[in-house]
Picture (spheres, rainbow, N blue to C red):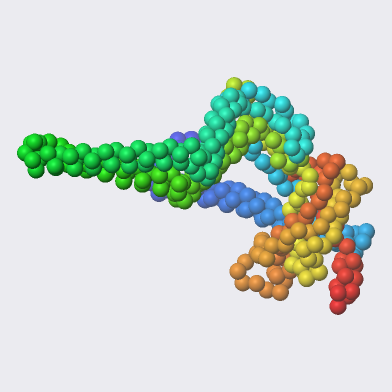
Length: 374
């Protein structure tokens, strides 16, 4: 007997079914995102642990070959000088290029010199003029000037005597009514003028004999010093038209070309200082009491691992770095480090700026030196 097939009736999707399916989907997505975040967090923790071990476990420590030798990894500091002219003008000559080695005192570039040479000539002429003025004041009056003043006094004296005689004649004539009042007034005026000229001539003679005032001489000396300073400044500006290397180094950058306008605010070259060099490293806190500024060290670079360069510690920072957390414990205090700078002669240029190096400190020598000092 064949059973009749009953058609299935599809139940309509309710609101509750929709909410349930969406919640299941969101829960699955939440599990996926949480696992993704966990993996990212785990990678960050592992990376931080590796960096911590590199900083505090591998870099500073004692070498495996010699337990009494402290090895600290550092790097050669980049020391650069931006070279610019002391005055402003157009560049006429450049004598070095990027990568060239220069020595202290080498001529690197030159500016147009004509304006500064003219300024020097002008200052020299003004100085020579003032020297002559001061010499004339210090020498006083010439004998010829004194004789002329004396002659002027004699002439004024003669004129005064003549004016007196004329005045007396006019007075006598006026009394006899042979001269008018006008004639008498004119004779008196001429007498007064003659007297004034005589007094002026006598005063001029006194001034000529006394010579210049001391204040005028001091003012002339001060003006002479000012013009001497102006000449030195003009010559200094002329010297500044030549750019001189301040130290041994390597030309790292050439920033301007011939014809460019250069000045104090526009560097022409960037000079890298390579001898001596400073190595920047970090000294672990446990060995802080056994290493001091002035301590002799050895420096090794990857470029020449078989060669050890001599150096000495120039500075140890008084402030700790890389502190793990504000609340310190005895275990955390051993992880503190102090910045240290090592001075290393580098005449052959073996140490390149920015290169990593190893600083080797013989702790036995430091212990022996401490005992000798005690």
